[in-house]
Length: 287
Length: 159
Image (tube, rainbow over all chains, first blue to last red):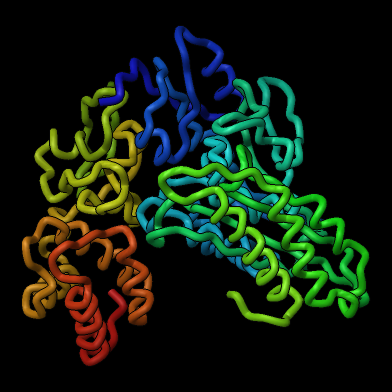
C-alpha cells in the first residue's frame, strides 16, 4: 500500500500551492490519480486538486478554447466545444487515451504534468498551440506548452500548479490529423504524430508537426514545419511531403526499449508525418 | 482519516488510510463485487460507478471519493435493467469463469444508461476497460444486443 501520511483537499489553486508548501515532508498534487497509483511517488502527503475549481471546459468571447487542468479525458472526449474545435482533434486524442474507466478520472492536466515522453494528450495540444496557465500562491503565469516539458517526468512547474490550458481561436479551423501506434489499443504509445495545417487563400499560413514518444519530451518538428509555412498548397508536391517527413524524422531522438526499436520509431515518424500531411491536405485518408 | 460518501443509496462514513485505494476500502467494507485483478487499471474486474461513471477502483484513492456517490453491483441487484442484463449474460453464454463479470456488467450498465440503443461498435468500445480470458467478448456483446432488442420490443424504455 502507498504509505501516505496525509491526504489534503484544496478549495482553490492558491490554497493548493500553500498546502503543498506547508509541509512537513514531501508533498505532491493529485488529480485523477491514475498515473500516481500505478507508480506511487515517494511523498508524505498529497494535495487533491479536484475540488480546487480548475475543472471544466469553456470558451472566451474571442473564441479561445479553455480546458481546466482537472477536466477529465472523458469530458474532453464528449464536450461539444472540444468536438467542435479543429475538427474534434483533441476529443479524438482524449477518446484514444487509456480505456473507458480510466478516462472517467484521468485528467488532461495530470497527463501533461506527469510529463512522460509518450503523454497521449501532448502532441495534439502542441499542434494546436496550447498555452499553460500556472498558478503560484498570489500570481499566475502563462507558458507555451512547448516550453512546459523539461525532460522525462520533468516540467517547469516546480511546486506551482497547472490550472488550465488555452487553445487560441486562431487554431479553431486548423486541419488536424493524428495517429498513435500502440501494440494493444489501450497501451502506452510507441510513436505519436499529430499534424495541423492552417490554410488561407490556398496557402499554408500555419504548419505544425508534433511528435510524442520519440524524444525525451513531446516536441514540435520546427525545421519540417518551416518547409511548409507560407507555401501554396498547389506547390506542395509529393516530393515536398516526402522531404518534409524525412526532416521531421531527423528531428526526433528516439530510444530503443522493450516496446520498440529507435530506428523503427524514427521511420514511423517519417511514414506517419507524410501520410498525415497528405490527409490534412485532402489527398489521402489516414483517419 | 474519515470520509463521507453515498454507497448504494446509503450515507456512510468510512475510516480509511490516506494512501488506500478505493478497491481496498470497498473490500474492507464487505463490498466484494469489486474484484482485485491486475491493480494497474487494465483488467476492469474492480469497476464500479462513481457519480454514474465507470471507474477502476484500483486506480482511485479512497480519499478521492469523499462526498461522492458510489454504485456497485450490490446496489443494482433488483434493478430492472441490471436483472435483464444478468439474465441475457447467463442465457447467451456471456459468463464462464465469472471473475470479470461484475465489472463487465457495470460497464454495460453504464453504457445502456447513457445510450439506450448502442451499436455493436459502441458496445465493444464500452468494453475497452474489461479483460475477459474466457468468452472472447462475442457472447457478452451478443447479450447486450439482446437487451437492446428486448427493450425495443417492450416499448423502447430508456431506463
